[in-house]
Figure 1 (cartoon, one colour):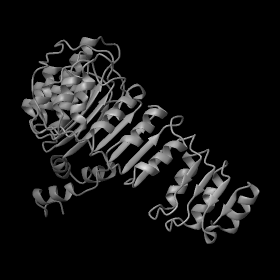
Figure 2 (figure 1 turned 180 degrees about the horizontal axis):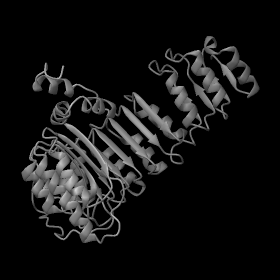
Figure 3 (figure 1 turned 90 degrees about the vertical axis):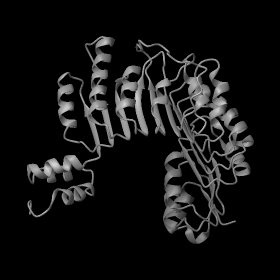
Length: 402
């Protein structure tokens, strides 16, 4: 069997195998030939390792077996201990050099080992010019001008380290006009006074998706005015744990963005800021995902019903102040919605699910049994089982079909 199939055919077969450890183990046990062909056909590799100098030699040897890699993920399982910042930087840069010199066909790179130096990034751009997606960590002061060196870059994920040494400093000409083709941008850890971010905002005019996490600012003093330039074409925005800037970002979106169709806000903002956005946004928002335990109440949901007429998906998590849901006539809602409601809206007291054909008796019964604060439910009589009716009486829940 081993000699009947040519190398090219085996490689095509291996490309179609599931990316699971069991599949890789099964192939590798057949013969050395199969193992070598499997490695040479593999286009994606994900590695998690402990920091040790022996890893440098091992990684160089390992990557030589995978000449066709287009996607590579390297993640450190533990921080680099017993080493000063210069030693840690040297380890990271050496590892980064091995990647850039061994994987010239990369399209996607996720490198979360430690802050990457500017010189290493410029070196990467010469070796891997086709990169379209980069995920890395950077130290301060920030230098982001290297982005221009990647002409195919569409997705950029930056984790800003709170402490670190960037020996090159800013190295950024703020007057440089270098508009690039980024469509997705993820930023984590931006603090007030971080320079260089304003330059990034000014040149991201094709941005479609923006994600901010653990950010206390959008950069230094001038960055918010530059931020307006990148929001006009946004279609998706995710804001996670960015309480101090959520209101400002939502205000700019409401005033300047007419293309937004998806918004996620987790753990941040204020009641007033969110309500202002809902009442004034000009976009046809279709998906709204909120995890706001103390910042979302019935007033917000009423505003959603009045103003977000194109909404097709509403997801609420840990929304403790929401007590009244009117879903009458929502024909695409299913029982899965009620299961999720019972788990996430613990204070739910009233729900109207009349004329919702996707909701069946089983889901109604589940809602009655699991919502301890429920006091009123409006639903068709034929969807109320005997068990649901008994429990409704026991828990003093008014069930009507009006």
